[in-house]
Image (spheres, rainbow, N blue to C red):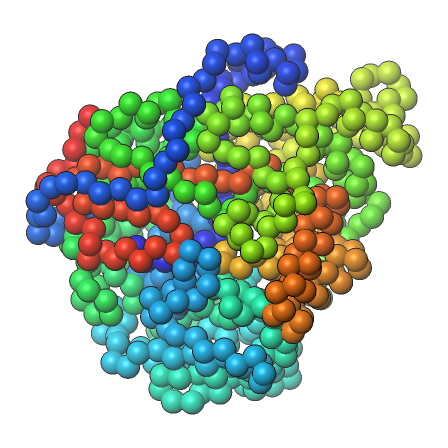
Length: 592
């Protein structure tokens, strides 16, 4: 399987109806519900027997209740659905193993020189883009000049790119070239960095993994790239497939890329289409879809399926509850933290965490599949996750005490606390729409917070469509106080790009000097020392679970359906399954 680094932005679904949940007086009555069947453990790979047919079309579902945005470029997209489309035709420069560390399976190779703070990137000679043009090292250099450009409209520019020598001068318009980029020859690039942290060994860490067709995109002004035909409807890549046609936001037809640098894919085409979460199981059982991601909350609806297999993996992503505590200063490109906001009060955030019975949520909503997150680092990163840090236990009385001790008291007797200044306090909670039961999860959270005296209400009285949700979160809509979302950590557990003071992805807009000091340690040359790095990560996790700019709720466990006419499929992180090994055993998918 072609490997990629995903930014996962996804809501999690529930299995209880809204009416059933609203009838509950408190989270404790979960125990009164009919016992849910518990899901088994899932393998990450599956193989189906059958004789190979020549070619054929594999039907792939992008499961979403909304259209994909259609920003089909790795430098520019911001939502996971677009990333899922991109991976078929432009999967990224490097390969990585199960620990997200570079291996030799990707298109490009990396050689590290810690002493000189340099990285040498090489690509193979004689390879071509899917339009037949030669791939050269200029296609690796080009993304640095796009992302660093003052007119760049995406969200990738940050500390990793600023760490390249000469990048800040170029970004500020003080230089025409980036001094840290040395073009050695047509297939070799040497990059010099200011600092050389341990993230350099992680795919998705400090080294840019972008490769883009310079011969196509350089003709378009950087400010106009995002809305250009070359990004929206006629993208060029080097992956196993090429884009044949696009119905914007709805579907993409991929054909085999005749210039692909590895073995030819076994199928002739892939037909990708958006399928609503409410109908995906029916589509799978009807044989209309070969491969699709499934919601663990819907396990009961597909547990007995006979025409497809279900495989799964714990991912490098987690769902979380975020607290808005400031704004993004676009001119200065930095977070502006506002300590006067109610959500900037740590006791309030901790109380909201204690109010939620997450094990019961998993049991009743996710059939026990999802695990309560114990840290802001996922279990994939075994070298970095701290055993000393744990998630919050359900403790509503303790939550009430935290609020009272911090000055949040009900002064007018309406059942809801006022803020420490005695002013009425109402918090708007925003989260994404998804399948039909996502609202039940949101209403449970709100009910639990109401039970400890916090007047929390659903923003606009409804869940928000994916693209609109992230637009409001990213633009710091003042009506959003608390929100539910998810992070994909990519291939590097270093949190600087998600929580750093100069990270646009720092959606809570929180920062402190103490936190910045820990980030500096993680990004220092000293972080190559195992003991130093482990201690810095432990300190960071401890601080985050105390301060709670975001409260990690569940480590995400992804499930995938694979029709029994598909020879094999593997979702393990770092797997090296190739599209040449994924063939069909019949012209039509197997039906229920």
